[in-house]
Image (cartoon, rainbow, N blue to C red; front, side):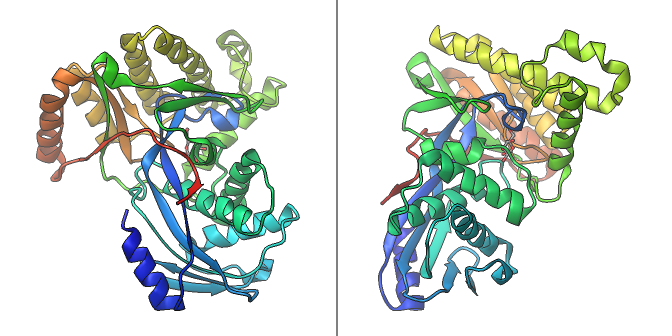
Length: 378
Ligand code: GLA
């Protein structure tokens, strides 16, 4: 992350110096589309994120500069002041959600930059929201607890960015801890840190980015959520969480074929997260990998959030003998997350690159995963 460039731009735009805050993107080992179903997720924060330099400016206006987009926006803090630029709406949304919770904030200047690849399913938007939620909480001494900071980011997505997302990404970005994944129960919000050190056991975790643009705004993401809510309602439950396949089968003729498949994926995924956590306790990476493949094909065939390129990457992984591979994040493009034996790593990456390039005309991008800390002051 180029902090010097942020400093330089802040100085150039605002003629002073502010304080630095950062929040990371995330990976998710397993538990996809379970968060808004009240289920379990198993994410970790990564060493890529957003950094913002911020200084209170004594006015009632926010003046924001996106270093990466070379774009500037200025807006007030009332509902009618919502900026046009979508990147600025994330910052505006965080301000508004803080205010709705009774937080007293005022104008500030900011320049920010990130190194989470956009649209890769690594939660660049949660990194942005968490950076500002955490920074404003500190700078205005608001005393908001960390769960609420995550909810502020989530409500920003719902109310200002058009994505009815769950809590996983913002939670991971705020609560991340180096060397640990977190199993979060999205119904009770109880969570547990799990030490995660695959290298110690001869494995590596790597992301392969198909570079297929992933866009959740106004996307089928919200439709998936609506399917799940319809099935939960027919089952007489608040969430799909806790429903069994047998229960689902008893209502099969009351729901559409499509909703049935969506729910079948979610119910299966619930159990897979728990299996993976248990397997990790025994250092049983083979089971972890098996469940990852099951998730991939469930997301592809039942939940229908994959795409040709991601199915291709998972297939190549399987053919190369990779332990586990699956689409990561919301879907519709982005990355696969791969659990691969150290001795297979180089040949897998080389094969995946060349076969993908042969078919799609460009190589996938490769990101090593380093599990890192959550939102903090720099
Ligand atoms: C996106 C959402 C999350 C979660 C994942 C899928 O990243 O922001 O809340 O639903 O998709 O697991």
